[in-house]
Structure formats: C-alpha cells, structure tokens
Length: 145
Image 1 (cartoon, rainbow, N blue to C red):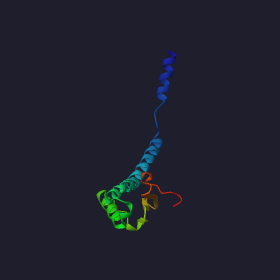
Image 2 (tube, rainbow, N blue to C red):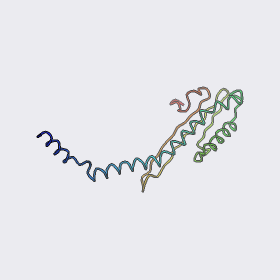
Image 3 (spheres, rainbow, N blue to C red):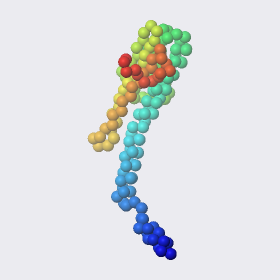
Image 4 (spheres, rainbow, N blue to C red):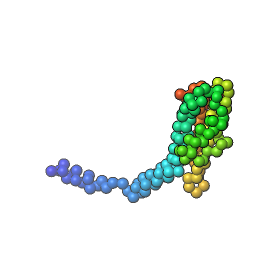
C-alpha cells in the first residue's frame, strides 16, 4: 500500500517540460528549419551539377574519341543539362574548361552568399571537377592540380 502511494506522488510531481524549455525547443527547430529552407536548394543545385559532370563520358562516347571533343561541345552539353535541371545561377565564368591532346578537365567552382536573417549571411562553396582521364573519380578535384 505504501509503495502505491509513493509511485502516485512521483507521477504527480512529474509535469513535463516548462514553457521556457518548450520555447527553446521550438526556437531551435525553427532555426534549423530556416537554415534548411535557405541553404538546401544550393545543395540540390550542386547535386545536379555533379550529375551533369558524371554524364560527360556520354559526350566522349558520342564523339568517339577525347581528342575530337571541343570546348563548344562540352559547353553546349553542360548548358543543355543545366537547362533541363533548371540550374540558372551558374555563370559561364564559373565553368572552366581545359583541353589537351589526350584529356579535358572541367572545373565548376563557385560560392554563394545566402542571406539568413537581418545582417547574417551563410556562405557555401562548392568545388567540382571532371577529368576525362579519370572519369570514375568524378567530381572532387585533386589537391595537386
């Protein structure tokens, strides 16, 4: 009988979170949600850019040889894929194409400044590289290049 009384008293004293704790949890969830909604689309765009770079070997297969691929071919291939995936915020200055006799390298390096709230901004930087001599190792650049 006394055990039952003690457990009943313990249950009455446990009331859950205070209003300040709930406010802190809701504020933290709101901040995380705000960050996700502001920064998330940039990561989705970069995912599509990476997908485009991974599809560049199709261009080599269509041309038959790496030496037959021109800058215009690569540029139009990337432009078409960007149009299909609705990527509008990459300028031509951010796409660097280097062609040699036996390979080509495409660098898409950019950063975006995203206003979070008031005077607080978030900067995200992306570095993507496709090297036709190592197409399976797409899309992170080597440190020595």
